[in-house]
Length: 203
Image 1 (cartoon, helix red, strand yellow):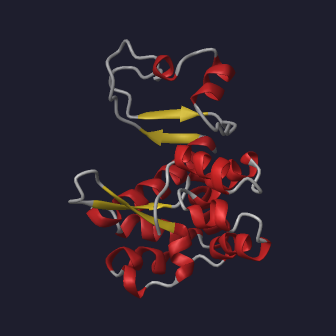
Image 2 (tube, one colour):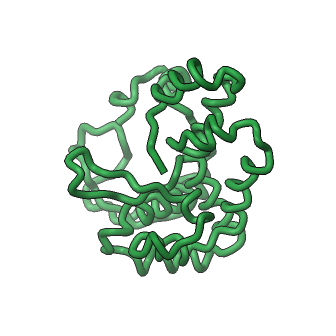
């Protein structure tokens, strides 16, 4: 499938797909990723739009990871969930979830129905370069969930003492964190509005 930037989608929507509202195109872009077929071409075809929901609900994580080594053997359902991004020099590629929406929904689906399998896949794929991006995405979301739940965690100081990040003392091996609420932001502007700080200042 061809990969389109958001700017290209906007131009195409204005010139060739005026029947698709710009707001709907943006919404579908956030869901499907950079695929014009579903963002514009099939934007108003409800039965085709449901394919993404079906793919997420029926996700087979083993099939998703197998797709990375054998894309020609994977079915169309997996291709709705995984995109191949080619480097600018055309010499390398990475497999990514189609969008942040897809990644989050797949993680939630697995967390609620197949948590042990999710954790096993994250563990056994550590160090496997070709699955690194997918594994990293799932690991990051799971780590955030675990930490947000609160508890006592092993820790290691990674920053200079002047950092704003944490309240660690020399020699600390553990840190206790209270339960945290999860906030989701669509872009950096929402982060700045919520906190009053730029993203770089928060880090």
